[in-house]
Length: 289
Ligand code: NAD
Image 1: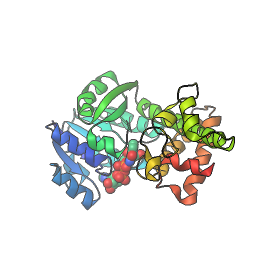
Image 2: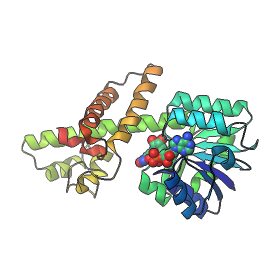
Image 3: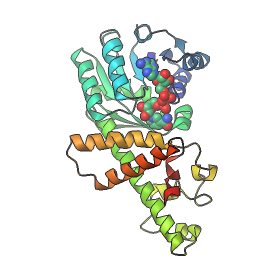
Image 4: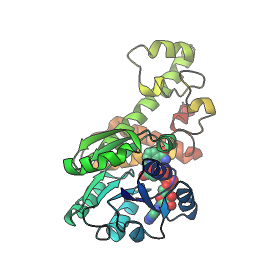
């Protein structure tokens, strides 16, 4: 297929390269020259505007920083410019309301579109092992699925437009809660005289077991290899976790949802990020206990 790819940063660069590897012709655009050059080296054809990149394509994929940018790119340069019949896939993490707004604007102009945010970081984007949670009509999902499969290991239909973003922020809110809870439990266990490895051996096979403990343990040297073993470098940056938590808090307010645990986790990550830890893996929050 001829696919336009807009936003070739840390995530988009690897994703576009995987579309090329799958045999697609990728027409790439990014505001950054460095990102464009890397895309060219990966086999994409590069363009100097979104409008040129989306000419004559069957699909448009975007991986952009936030909702305002996504809305601007689609309303100014994609909707009405891409050929009628093209399908649009926005893989950025953005707020649910903007995702729904952009999709309904695309549909009003006769296009099909899905929101398809991802779980998995830069390594998964490069390795083609992302998980996509997809919102949109059955027909838009069916068209998006084979394109997403070239960039990921799992593609799950979450329901109507915006539901991909809803799944993503609810999942990441839960992740922040169980990471903070896991850190809290390890810190208290140690103060009560328990060795962290011993606590792990017990809790990992008891009812406190959870992903933050057994797949991503925040205590160095305990559990499988994780960013804590590398002084909390790499992994999922605190600033990105905070971005998702802010989106979750915004969605909670708009949907009148009670999120006492989520809002506490968001406050903890606001403080941790504000103390200069934005670049550290989000499990480094254990240092505050
Ligand atoms: P990034 O900042 O590395 O990349 C974004 C790219 O978009 C940049 O290259 C930038 O130049 C480009 N861009 C900005 N405005 C543009 C415009 N108007 N037109 C064209 N290009 C434009 O960010 P990233 O880490 O690749 O993240 C992208 C999205 O993926 C975000 O929504 C993020 O929340 C989400 N995400 C990131 C991760 C991660 O681990 N990095 C994981 C999951 C989801």
